[in-house]
Length: 144
Length: 308
Image (cartoon, rainbow over all chains, first blue to last red):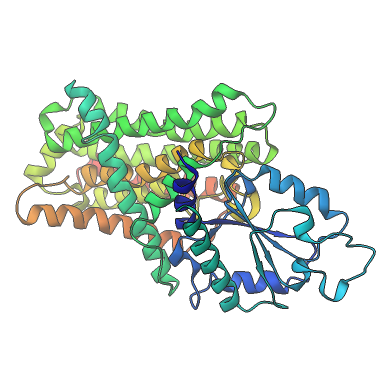
């Protein structure tokens, strides 16, 4: 079983575990918007799952607070590989308006290997969709 | 050799899994249309299973390894056997034997049991909670289901054989057409909903409150086997009801279309129930299944004994 086949199978049914690391819930609402009739991510086989053990995608929002760093690592380790990590929102990418705060010493990509960054405060559902499509294309090209 | 072929290919594993995937797609597509969405592509269940097969298996520390990995296989083996039995009898009622309905009923309990074993052996408090709910739900749905199934048995002059019940319906018309049959059918559909662990009876999995409940620790191939068991149950249980209440299937001319239509109607009914109801609490579910549903089934049994 080579890596290419695995990634190809992965791109056709991405199960997402949504992890908030101290966000203001605005990004989370926009993510849920992607599952509504207007955008409907299930067209691409993407669904939200309740347990990180089932997930292929770890979707991280929020500005990674100090208390959350070990927990985020734990959740990432319990995710079955191969899996990808998506960081959504300005806070998860850098720290946004919380830059320099004592409570968030590290960004998401200093803790986890992030595959896709979706900027915006909050990003529009269209932006999230465009990002996911880019990620799927990238993963499929990687196999060849 | 012949038995092995019928167990593994037709009408056993491959056939059931294939039609089950179509049934699962139909279920998801109808759900999507009810919610004004587009819904997943046709091969989505196959993609899901293929993806889960290539994922890593995470085994939690301190779990009972053999039971944790073995539990999904018990369920899969049992549901394959049930499907093979039912289809053998549907294709050729001569192969029925006395008491085959009892064998079918107890084999149908094993997928539920395997979920309970898997949940308890994974050493996760959430999975244990889910497994205990599944256990209570099983106690709750067996009573109305067995009462409902006993109505065709009583109508077919007390013969506990699926083949004989099919033959009886051939001469006297569908059991669904009688008063007792119709009432028993309603009870059987609600009990089936609980056996399939669909909303409103999905409190053992409860994505939003128990994070997947009994399956929370499962990943990769074992999870795929559990999903496959669910998918195959989605085909097997409606087929059993079609055989018991709606006169089985035909394989000539318009009979094929009519048989497919019977199954599809039952499946869409299950999906619509699942989409228009909220999840019940476990105590509400037990009260509902032992109260009104078992009551309807009991009335149906009395009517059947009176000959209505």
